[in-house]
Each structure stands twice: as C-alpha cells, then as structure tokens.
Amino acid sequence: MPAGAGPTLRGGEGVDSRRVAYRLEGKYTKWNNNNGQVAQHTSSHARGALCAIAEEEEESESEKPGTRSELPVGCGLATGSLVISGTTCAMDTQVVPQCFSHFTWSVSDGKELVCDIQGVWNRTDGFVLTDPAIHSASSKGKNGHTDKGLGGIKAFFATHECSPLCKALGLKQFNGQH
Image 1 (cartoon, rainbow, N blue to C red):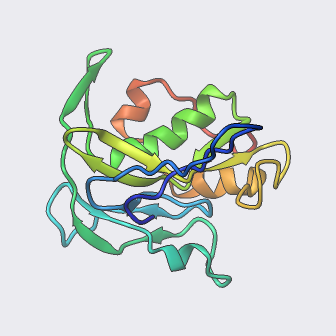
Image 2 (image 1 turned 135 degrees about the vertical axis):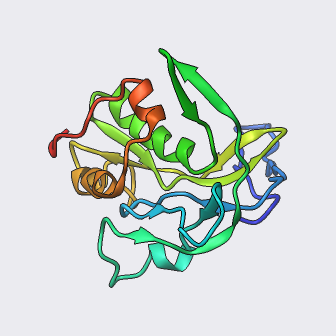
C-alpha cells in the first residue's frame, strides 16, 4: 500500500466527503496472507530479520494453500520482550503479527480469523496494519471475496507455529475444525 493511502469517508446530505490519508512510516511488510502463507525468518539472515510475502504471490492461481514464503526484505526491529505468567516472550516484528492472527481466532471461539496482516512497524507507532482479510468458519465469502472460510483458517494453521507468546496468552489450539 503506498504511503498516503487510507479510508474514504462518505458523507450524507450536506456533508463534504473527503479522502483521509495516513502517512505510513516504516517499511511496508506483508507478514501473512489470506491463503495460509506466512513470512518466515531465514537461516541466512540475522536474528530478527524479516521476510515478506510478495503481493503478486498472493494472487497466483498456481499457489498451494499453506505454503511458506522465504523472501528477504530486510532486518526486523525487535520490540523487546514481555513476561506473561512467568514466561518471557520475544516481541519481535515477526512473532506478533502471527500471534495476532491466532489470537483473533481464539477469542472468536474459532468463528473467525483475521489474516492478510500487512502494514508497517516503527519504534514510535508500533504496528500500523492495513487491509486485513477475515475468514469465517461458517461460510466462505461471508466477509467478501478474500474470505476463504474454514479452508482459509485451516491454511493459516497449517503453517502457523505457536510462539512462546501464543502459549503465554493461553491461545487455544486448532483442532482441524474450529
């Protein structure tokens, strides 16, 4: 998403409609997509290095759901650590987005999962995420054309590796159904 893009506000009668623009500070990264791909650390990069999913990969017809992408985009910036119930969890820019997707599924009792996590991270604002997709376990397409239903949820969990953060938050485990 180019810097300056943002939501369009629509006004009613007598209300001026304007485009609201946000400047995203930081390197735009796609941490996961709606087809189960998860950005991965690669062994050839230093700890904290990120890889991203190229936008054209997401739309590929030949893509197999639940595959991992290893496309280096540069070094991630560690955000520190957090202690939850006596467990120290790394809070780096790779772990948090994946845990967020898992969290959304867990707190919705397996009914939905927010994915297609993309945006920027910087030391001032933290994560600024844009253009997510939501998979609904009850029906494919319920949340628009990017909603792959239970198949999309299964594709996410086929590649997701629970981090110490997922475990410390007590996120429930995916059992293949919901």
